Image 1 (spheres, rainbow, N blue to C red):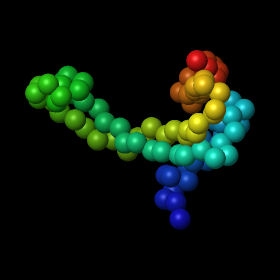
Image 2 (cartoon, rainbow, N blue to C red):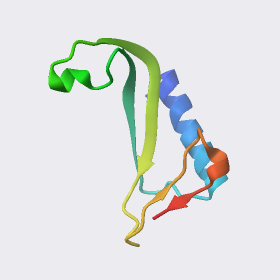
Image 3 (cartoon, rainbow, N blue to C red):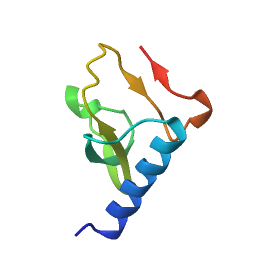
Image 4 (tube, rainbow, N blue to C red):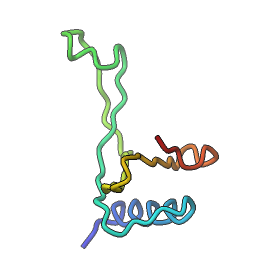
Length: 86
């Protein structure tokens, strides 16, 4: 059984896929956590001190191989950009 926020995220992915006319059948769905870094972004990789703050926001994505040799992307944050293909 999915947690409430997971169900909401998955439902939102389905809604966005419908908007973009992207088929979700056979996709894998992943969620990653997010954080705000006060100071230098990614500074921890070179020894710089930073203050990272965890959030309750997540980045969600659904993906699968297309077999076309192309990538197709759609962002729920920038829906007016439509489907980007390269």
